[in-house]
Amino acid sequence: MGWAARGVNLATSLVSVPILVHYLGKAGFGVWLLLMNVWALVGLFDLGIYQAYVRYVAHDFAGNDERGLAMTNASCLWLYLIISGLVLVVYGLVMYFADAMFSIKAEETDLVRWALVPLAFSSAISFPARLFEGLLFAQEKIYLYTAIGIPLSLARLGLMIALLEMGWGLMGVSLAFLAGSLAEYLLVALFSLRHLPFKRWFSLGWHPARIKELLKYAADTLLLIVGNKFRQRLPTLMMGFLSHPVAVAKFGVGMRLISQSVDQVIASAIAAQPRFSLLASGEETQRLREVFVRSCFYTGLIAGYLGVAVTLLAGPFIRLWLGPDFAQSVEVVHILIVPMALFAALSPCEAILYSLKKQRVTGLTSLAEVAVMALVYFLILAQTGAIGAALGLGIGLVAIRPWFLPTYVCRKIQLSIFAFWLKGIGRAWLILALAGLPLWLLFEHWHLDGWLELVAGGIVLTAVCGGFILVGLGSKERVYWRDKLKSFLARVSAPKKADPKQS
Image (cartoon, rainbow, N blue to C red; front, side, top):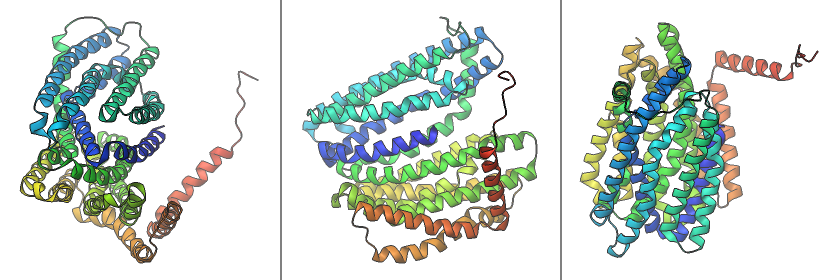
């Protein structure tokens, strides 16, 4: 269900961008990206409370504690209502100072302010609505939340297109976003209450002891959340302050294309986190080191493959997707591909730090990256636009993380830093570099001038990379995957046992 949701999100993103550019223009699309970054950054007001809420609700379910669940829900609701009020105040300030904050034309200021109103309501309601989302997560019913989002993404896209066709412009896009959000909040609430094992899930009241527990737990993840949010949103917001909306649009297109690829890698790396936690809690250090290096190798393979694919195919894809006006977006992709691929390949380091309860280290690293990025932006962004934004982000990602995080993790699990690089990411990237050389020579002469040629190019690229990966895995890994495949086929082909009750 998770992969289906990612596929739908990717498809709707690819479809919506040219539609938005067509109806809003490059400058209007850049303004919408700025507004969406404001909406996302306001999510920082959660302050880690959601993670704390899921943890305590899961504890209440496990202990069959109806009273505890009611106290947790009431406490979080009060916290979120206070946050919602603060969020509306922040949006009011953004609306008031919109002309000073963003590089927009004076005649567009009122339109931007009105477009912020639906986003303000969506943000304010999203916080208390997180209670119902958390109830599903705590019961391990994530698939329900994901399943709700898939049709709503398509419905939101359809409504947006209809309102744009009716001439509603930026306001129509904002209203479509609000309608989709409200529908999601309502459906999630209905499904979560339907699957609750307790009748008593909420009671009015202020519970200072539980609120204190929630805030204490939330503080442990606060640095990580703040660092990640600012690193993701700072480039676009800084461009809104120091550059033109058209430059925001060109940077946003390149960034969206590459971030979609990185998200797939990170989602794959997260799969190793439960195993890390299990081995760390059992003090199986030797096995933990082995699994960590192996996960770095496979994450490096995925990141390297996507890096080769995006490097070679981004140019023709963006040209066919949006036309020659977005040629600068290709430069953004080429500047960011190595830093972002390296960032994705290092995601097992973050996963193991979670398992070792050292997530603050990752948060501090992200904040340090944000400081480097902000410095670069103040020096060059106003003159360089989209290219400067890509350079600032790239420098921020390679300045600290690749050197600090692996060293810290290797010391914690007593692993040689040379083994980490040589047996993990380094080995994976050597395989993909060897695959990339003949592919680069091929695509230098094959220009991929149509969608069918682009698809054929992707198939060829995947086949070549797959062949090099298969050879580079080594005999031990090939035997491992061959046995896995045999076991899977045996389970699929095995006859089902008769049910004793039926017989």
